[in-house]
Image 1 (spheres, helix red, strand yellow):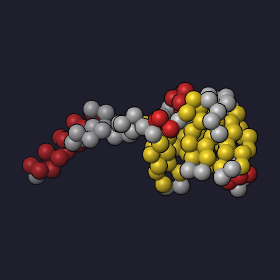
Image 2 (cartoon, rainbow, N blue to C red):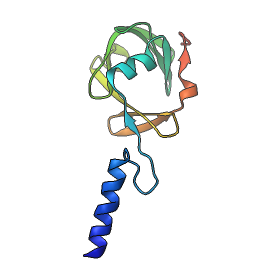
Image 3 (cartoon, rainbow, N blue to C red):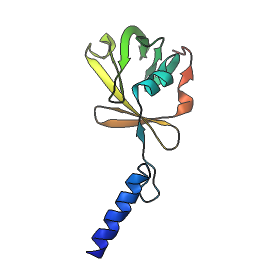
Image 4 (cartoon, one colour):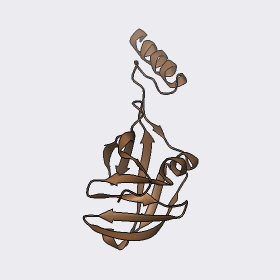
Length: 126
């Protein structure tokens, strides 16, 4: 019983300090304004290309040597969403979190990829 109380106390203290449980900081989901601030005017990397965010609604996707213009938006679920024929014409939404290191975690279809903040380039670098 004492171990249960100690664990519950530790967990409660960790949650009260912003998710820092046992000295390990956790990633933070980005808000819609934070996503817009991070992406607009910048190129976000993908494994075979990237995405340049020209404005709050317009972007260009580059994938495997091909490019396509698209509409995009950020939502309140820490995601940015877009639709391109390059990826089958279905809407895709990628989740973004800021990691304790200052880099980002991009999640899509259950897979999380680390995106270094230094890999997000100013301007259109496609």
